Amino acid sequence: MPIRLLFLPLLAALFAAGCGASHQLDDYRFDDATVAVVANIPPRPAVFTDALFDARLDPDDPLGSVFRAGTALAKHAEARRAQQRMDSALAYVDVAERTARRALHESARTLGYRPVDDPAHADFILDLRVADYGLVADSWDAVVYFEVEAELRLLDRRGRRTIWKQRIREAEPASVAAVGLGTTFGNVYTAVALSRLSVEEMAHALEDLADFTADRFAGALRHDYYAAR
Image (cartoon, rainbow, N blue to C red):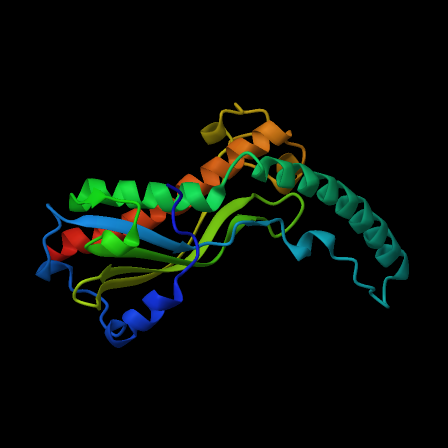
C-alpha cells in the first residue's frame, strides 16, 4: 500500500492541542507498538537555482552585461534540457514515496516498532512535513548539494499528543560515487555535471536524494531517542 503522502486535515485537528510538546520520548516504549507514516513532501524536488541564470544589466559594464546575458541564455537552455530529462527521471522514481517509506523503516531499527501502512490503525504516527528539498547549486560550476528543510513529529494517536518534534535543515555535497557514476566528474557533482546526466543517471541521483532526506529524518529521531535514554 502506498505511503499516505498528503497530510490529513483530520490529523491536524486531532493533534492541535498537543503540538507544544517537543520531546517526551523517555515516557514511551515502542517495542510492541505499530507506527505508520503520514508525509507532506513535494513530489517534485527543487533542481538548480535562479542564480545559475543571472543576466542582470550592469550600467558600468554594458559589454560585460551583454556577454553575461548571452552566457546566461545558453546556460538556461542547457538547464531546461536537463530539467526535461529530470522530469522524465521522476516518472521512474517516486521521491516522496521512497523518502517516507525509508524514514519509517530506518526509524524502526532504532525504536523497535513495527511499521504499518494504515495510520488509522497505528499506535503512533510519524508525521513528515517537508518545506523544501532538492539538488541545488549557487552557480553553474559550483558543487551541487542535497538540501532538506523539514519539521518532523511523532504522534501518539491514541493519546492524541505530540511526543516528539524536531526541525531540521541540512545540506551535504551530492556524491557522484554514491550513485554509481564513478569519478567522471570528480568526487562530487557540479551543476554542469548534473545537467549532463542521462535520464537513467538522474533517476539514480533522485534515489540518492530520497535516501539522504530519509536518513536525515531517521537520524534526528535516533539522536533524540538515545539522548532520552
